[in-house]
Image: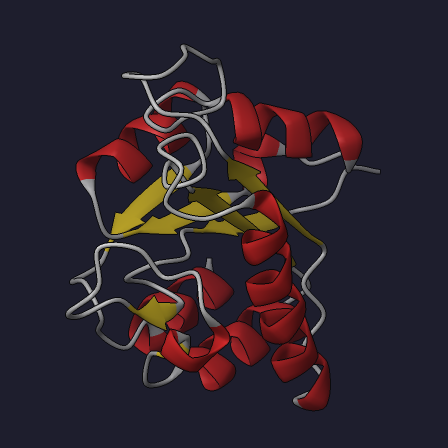
Length: 165
């Protein structure tokens, strides 16, 4: 049996990125309101949770993959402390100006990799993002539905909606 999943963008959806072009320091990583409640709702409804994020600052030399891993470790611990299990985090360290790739959103590479690696039923899976490129990636991966939310806002109502579907 295949799993159902929700793919969630990081900066602007999970964490607040106001006033920052890149979030790569733990001190700057602040959860948006309602993230714990929203992800708990999805988890309780049986969804596997994935973070899908472009991290082009790596390609541009602004920060390193180690910096990304430290932030993700911090986030995973925050979720663990709240009994939320993130199935996996996928990030694209590339940028078109430095090198081309298949993973940078709006391309669906990261989502397709997760679908393959975790036996995900894309017709029972969703995406939550705050940009057109997020939505384009979800649509290109043939997910059931993609939800565009306002940057740095609560996703609780969207999560409740998905949980009822």
